[in-house]
Image (cartoon, rainbow, N blue to C red; front, side, top):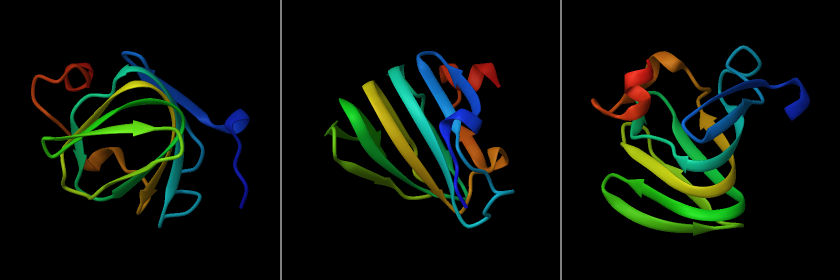
Length: 118
């Protein structure tokens, strides 16, 4: 299987632009997305998937279960399922969901700006 940004499904909110490169329909055990970040993601957790972020460019901060982690190009961040997290900065990120992303498993913190959009 091969996937490209040109064929990806584009989405975004509040300074976050994303491209879903693959989905559960392609491969149920994992999915991949690319993000261009210029702001804050919003506090969320997945009840289904562990998430692995690779910082392709830029720098920022991940807040995972209340702990702050500064990140730079070339670093990896792992967010276990059922763990609230957020990130902020100016970064390009590659995200792997394992198993594949399912929007029904997303839990946004009440009052979060993204949760208000849902």
